[in-house]
Length: 380
Image (cartoon, rainbow, N blue to C red):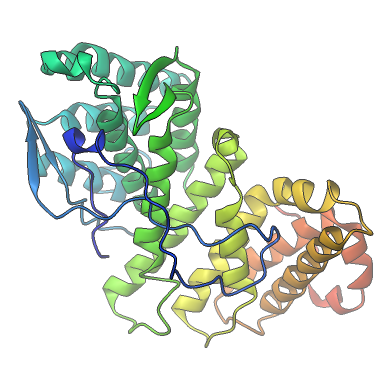
């Protein structure tokens, strides 16, 4: 995959949020909320370089991850997430990323339910006892170095999210780590000119998430066609992993503190179910992403756009119409009309059944047509 650029720690405090380009392409579909538009880059990419912050040399370019699909085992050396962390250490064995990667390595290798909370505390200790004292002047900065520290941490989290297969429980442990991190005592800092509460509410997370979405999305969902090379297939797999992780984070409530938490599922469900393309790996990738969003955060989407809107209102009718459209497309996919991939058909069937359970009126309308779809229970 094209590298997603890692942000230099000592430059982040000065990087402002930029307004998305006025000539950005319009969304290819009708969104549930007309205010939505595709996520845009918040700041321009930095050049690939290695920049030093005193004794902490921080790489700007991200790890070129080598992922597999569903064969990674928890704690197994050579698994995708282990390779990811190993490559980070090889790039910068003496930097602050070393400490961060070791905390995350222990988190993912541990079988303890307390591991996410312990890892969160270890991250805070690393900031207070190692990173902040590394530069006497950092205490006098508006962000006290927190902008750079968090950006480095969150970039690593999203690197791991791409590397961990989407059905692997380690994704859930990584999500719980973010939840526990947000529970720590807050630190009042000013990042990019705005007052923030680290770790509970900081612009850094939403910016890094947007950058990673854009960095991955432009290589998968935007291309009209891609050669089915190993590198392309790997990007597709990483896109499903990343999107599933984002959905898990949303379900955990972590993104509720940020506006428009639903912009990713709104855009990517529509991209997978409303747009047409030839059958193949790219199509399967987009459908899988849509099914994961619907299975994981479908209840939150239904509550916000269907339950909380008056049925007879224009917005309520629009939302219900889209819900039925998506349901119909999933039904077609489950019946093998859009993809010959059994994994995709299974995911579509499960997402369709879940949508039916949330909106009985859709089920009643489609009862005869849906008779061919298996009534196997959905497992989450």
